[in-house]
Length: 516
Image (cartoon, rainbow, N blue to C red; front, side, top):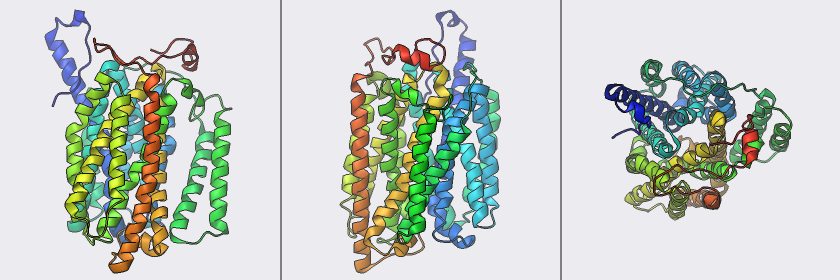
């Protein structure tokens, strides 16, 4: 496996040793970037399999245990653009390294948690570190690699995410079954410290520092709005629609509307709406949102199915998901090369189409479906995901003005994470319509299993959730395909994908220059 190398000027070609040293440093830099994405991915999936043990060990209320996951994702969602902006101001590498440090501290605290409040609070600390890592990793890559090599570079980060998801699923099953749930956090400490040490040696800030303003009012408004809606959806999944639930839902939606109004008025918004003037940017970001809304639920729905109606243990359920992740990991770099060669629209849209097919197949599951069929469908879904992610990331970063890489990278994570957070909640809400809410919730967190007619009813509920995901994924595919007219395909010389950027974008960049 070879990492993409930074193109060197001809004058530097004669200094082979220096060039070799630069290439080695670039390869090590990519390893560090991959490790950061990997660690965040591990903690996105590994906790799922540990939820039952965390719930029992810390006496967490059944209705609150899902916030161990939601709190982590919600913090990343809210902070992504803000910490990306900090990267533009103080150095993307510096903020990336700070993210590692915060993530390690958060992991240490999570391993030492003693009750419900402490585990959720420490997951929030972890989320702060994850936001710093994920929001700035894309911008660091944009600084390191020229346009024509970014698709392949993002393929490596996609590989890091896939490997992390694999490790999260497998290690989660092993650790929960044979050791202790606390070790899902302890393992981050030594690996994180090692990654920080390597990062300090090989990563260097290359991007130009720019003055930025933060948007605390927008961040607080969006945070409270999303929290209100998520709280209402979570309560609906295990209780009746009462006045309190209605108040949270209406209040949350009102705050999200207020957030949009604030963003159109403040001088430095959390989500700068003007960036949507960049050709293809709106479609790329919204495709990321709907893809997350459709796909993040799949892991949870499958675990509900395998540990509920099929009665599998966490380790056996995780092993069935492993082949798809492994095949996806092997194809990630090839998928990034496709984006460089043919442009991002074709591989991204093809990947979303494959995921639509896989979701339709998942919606046909019964309580007697052969387990090997789940492996095949999971592989189709994983291949689709590995085609989409590097291509879409490349499209967003190629369209972004150079001095706004941090904000664009942060917005990419924000839109994806908004989809992921709501995917989690909507899936359990839809699936719980066919069975007692409390029982469905217990199955979801792995505290009970199902048999007989109740299992059949629950599987029918899963079908509804999968069909809902199909609708979201089709929307993502349509948005991806709509970008075809806004991105120029590379010529035979393999030149970079140059979006046709109007003068308005130059003004957006804050310098009156054309974005390149």
